[in-house]
Amino acid sequence: MSLRSHCHRVVILAAVLAAAGGVVCSPATDAAGAPAAGAGAAGAPPDMFRTGFVEGPWPSAAIANTWMGRTAGLGAQVVLLAVDWAGIAPVQPAPGTAADPANPDYSWGPLDANVRAAAADGLTVALTVAGAAGGPAWADGPNRPPSAAPGTWKPNPAALGAFATALARRYSGTFNPGTGILPHVRYYQGWSEPNLPNHLTPQWVRVRGHWVAESPTIYRGLLNAFYAGVKSINRSDVVITGGTAPFGDPPGGQRVPPALFVRDLLCLNGRLVPQRCADPAHFDILAHHPYELGGPYQKAYDADDVSLPDLAKLTRPLAVAERTGRALPRGHKQVWVTEFSWDSKPPDPEAVPIATLARWIPETFYELWSEGVDTICWFLIEDQRPIPNYASTYQSGMYYDTGRLKPDWKAFQFPFLVLTRGSGHAVVWGITPVAGTVLVQRRVAGRWTTVISFRRRAHTIFTRTIGLASRLLMRAVVGGETSMSWQPS
Image (cartoon, rainbow, N blue to C red; front, side, top):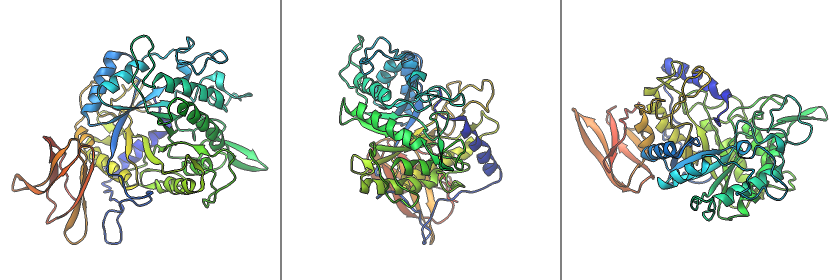
């Protein structure tokens, strides 16, 4: 089941309108016209930037092997696999057995095969506990109203913690289900989009005549139980918060805006002043899903919504929480984007043209890197079939549903862009798919001429300032890999 809420379909129409209207998006610049790298980020932008995909789990070992190989072939390093708690545990385990991954009440399905396939291709696996709703109906709190979907109503933190223990034990690198020891998984994400009512309810409650966001408090209890369960197996394993959805509603609406959700999760008020917090949030990485209403530099319209250029609305409260003990354990937290994409045209006639996406993908990676993000998981690697229609399915893959690569795949595998500065200069920026000598080239009189060269490790950022005499096509080459060409605007 897809992790992404269908409320995100609105981004497609807006993006198409922007592209059709000839809107040219430009990155944020400083007073001198230079790219505003690191604005809003806690510290300098990271040196490395990892890409990945939200996938499956695929239904068989053979299919998993095929798609994990394709994932690695696109230069991705991370695969985010959904763990359907409700599907694995359709009935409540007997008392005292829920933390046992060999519990016969558990049905792990194809997850083991997917983890094995990913490990075989050298991919880093992150497991996210999220299904069609939040969890199994048997874990709901009491008195669930008819308006709340089963599995979303005040889920039992102890039940989630026990399942997290079973999950981390199964993928501890020591567990043998009878088919050989399973690989070690280090990354675990507790929930998905907890600020949406189709994943967690209630989102709001009325207190003394005022609407108050309730889902952050519920989720803090779930997150802490999940953290304790994972860490009880291996303290070095990494816990990621449930990625927040980008848009919310006014108080009393359906959704809690993500910036408000994160502030409340971290026990901070609107002025980022720490509040009383009996059990602060425990996690290692803060995650968000910054889906867009336009191109990569389009800010969200509402103050507490968070699209691509708005991550400071999350990183600023995170920095305060780190300093004041509201984000535990103490220390710097990474920020990941565990879902992001646009649908493409073709195949979806109402989506973003592929030629536009070839430019937007590296701009997206640049924008996230400049805000301190070091990992993004793209949703998805393969298009869904348009059944019953395009509007209710996703065509955001790097592959068509026929298994054929889309023309913009190189923009993902070898991101490269040129950012113009004043006084005839430009910044070239990219991510190396392999190690070697990077050649930045421009096309002059029908031939590619090297402008600058330097050595970089694989999957690392490179950024250099060069002279820019005209709007000539430019590209980067390293280790036999060539980026898509870029024409400075």
